[in-house]
Length: 296
Picture 1 (cartoon, rainbow, N blue to C red):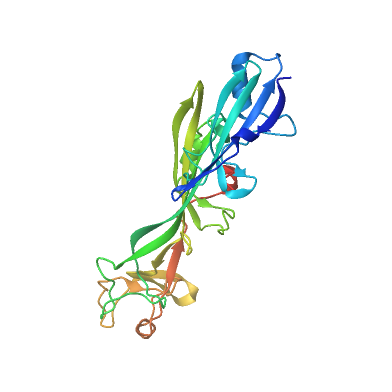
Picture 2: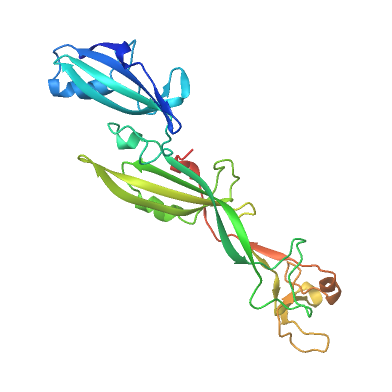
């Protein structure tokens, strides 16, 4: 046994408050038996408990005011078996769970994750308007260069300490889509756009600071492109299907891609004039289970 008793000390009661915040101190007396090395006692006193009373942990709230939290602690010797832990509650802000908000005596792998929600905007070509009609000029040709539009997506970045960096997994998952529901987003919506690791160490322990970033696109990541071309299927006698060059009304081969009906046949001019169009969708990113990453 090491810790014999943890007792709150009335001498630590008080408050220091002003316009810039408040600080409330509290002291705890920790007594030990002689069954442990003296050099270990300050470290044990830092987070001591006797089963009934405990020294509060860093960032834990004050028992009577949730706006106060343990900002700092220090341990002073009173005698060889008696140490005093000075605990300071404060309203002063600290950073979110990250490099500055953790118990310095804790295992790096037990430190809280950093989770950041943001947005990212990209400028991408667009070939259809809000009514799902192709964007064409007055003679029915696609614009060159294509019209661009801003696209804004949610961006989720998660940073956490891990014992190792799986670079093979990183290679697999970068640019992959979620095959399962991830943070409430349906399969095919979330794309892993970053998977990186940075080696760090504390004392003699090496670990990895791993960063993963995900971009959420509500419309999904299928590559959608207008179905058009210079050739069309033709149904010949006997049911045979051949492919021929598309010609205009006077028999000349078209100089611009001609809209097709989604099955390889050219659309009539009347259908084109009515705004009829078909698009092809292609999977260009592989699907992988994001549950393997254990990030939820």
